[in-house]
Picture 1 (cartoon, rainbow, N blue to C red):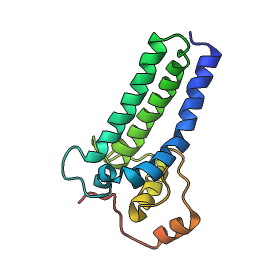
Picture 2: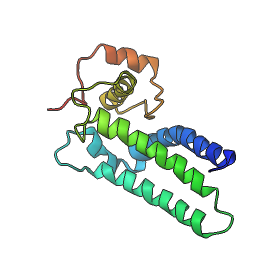
Picture 3: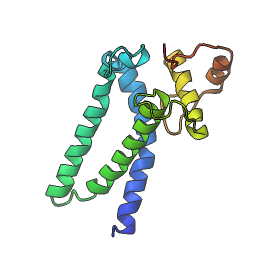
Length: 159
C-alpha cells in the first residue's frame, strides 16, 4: 500500500503537468519545435504524423526518471512523480488523440459532455494556432472564444 505522501506526490505531479504542458505547447511546439508540431495543424494524411514524436520524447524522459527512482538512492520520489506524469499523459492521449481527433474510432458515435467542452477549446486552438495551449483545463481567452463563435469553420472535422 503506497503511503499518503507517495499518493500526494503523484497527484501533485498530475496537476502540475497541465501548466507544464501548456507552456511546452506554447513555447516549444509553437516555437523552436514547430517543425514537428505543424503536422498536427494540417489534415492527417497517414496513421502517424511527425507531431507523434513529442509523446515518444516525453515518455523517454519519464522513463529516465523511473530508472533513476528504481536504481539510485535519493531518487525514489521520482517514482510517484513518474506515475502522476504518466497518468496525465494517458488522460491527455485519451482526450486529445482518442476523443477529439478520433484516432482510434472509439467515440465516433458516442459523445461525452466534458470531453466536448475540451474539444471545443481545442477547436479554437486549431482555428487560430493560439491559446488555449492546455488540454485538460484549457484557458480560452474570451476574445478568441467570441471570435470562434462567429465562424463555422471546424479544423477538427474529418475531410
